Image (cartoon, rainbow, N blue to C red; front, side, top):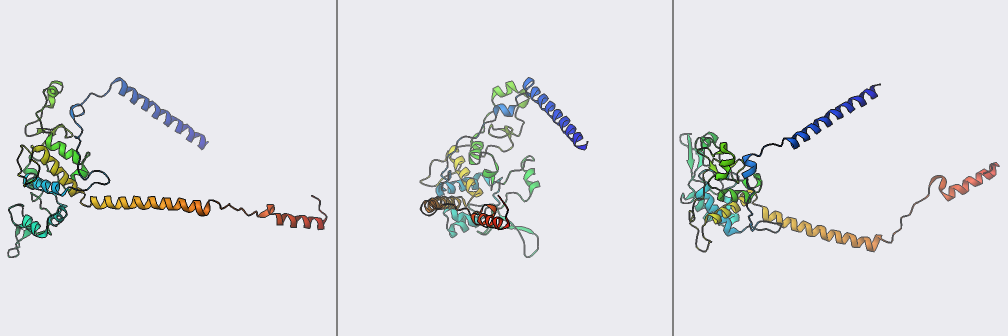
Length: 311
């Protein structure tokens, strides 16, 4: 009885779910959801090719150095890279003296590290050392929001891994600021970009609190032998730099992956050759046991004959 009741309850529940599903599908077909402005005008990131792309990719040190320069002169005023230390810049090709000069001279890096005055015990700041991580431009979240119309500038250490599209997203965002299209306002008159925000079709909701950081060619002065510092080039360079901050061991991972693939390929070939030369001709031998064993059958027949049992 209990089993029949369980079957009946299950059947009723299944029927209710099927009716609900049918109703939902019918509603979606008959009355589809109205298109939103984000769905209509949001764009996927532009294509971006970097030297670090692909399983064999390697960082372009010169591009990373230019990206560091763009970050230092343009982005560092609002965004930190708290997971990177000044000493890590040796991976970009800088020597110890250059790193010390970059961190502590004040000519390149101007934000000081929070510290304590040893004489008074009060909060103070000091020049960074190679052992320090890049300091945040703000002392705390409250100060960061107060300086940016209550918008919190994200830390950029992992931004290319935290955003869909990675480096292509950051690149597209930096070069994607534009005037809001008249067609958009015609179809969605209530979607006008509010004062204090900036229209960017590569941002999720189209309106971004960050003003355009890279505004003109030559905003950053590159060294001799570098490509022209166009808006497009500076956006690519800083995006490449942020790929490095997110995964500084990328080249090691690629090298390790190649070694593992070669080893597995070699092991597979060796295993197949061993099979062909050693085991392919071996026959599986099955030992008969129990009543089907010929020795057991002979002994059983002899015992039956002595006992006078037929069959």
